[in-house]
Image (tube, rainbow, N blue to C red; front, side, top):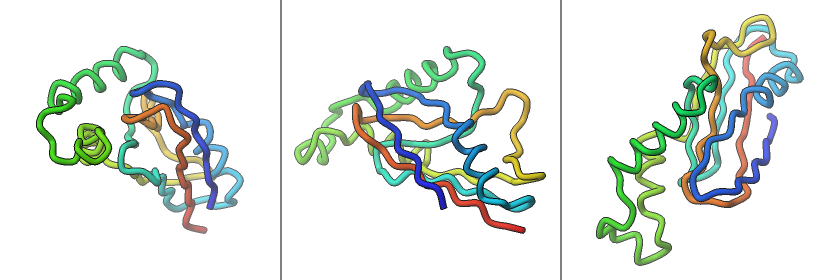
Length: 133
């Protein structure tokens, strides 16, 4: 298992972690199998989408913010003022699975593995586990 440390610099931001995941899979020695990428947080998400146009990520963040506005009488805000980030992560998810073929994660032409910070800036941990032969 590989642990990736991500230092975010903004309240909300997207970071493409595709190169780090590819490297972890290559170093694992797994030729064919499955790769699990898992964020160890409840206010940060992972998903696969396009990274060629940065507007996509901004659109995703804006859409999530429209669906889940900050400080909308959430009970959890009384504890640490980040209920919206928890809800956004619940919608987005904090893990993904990828097929490994020929020692590499299988991704479509425009696909990238994206880490979304929703309550930063913070230091975050992502685990990458390759399983197979």
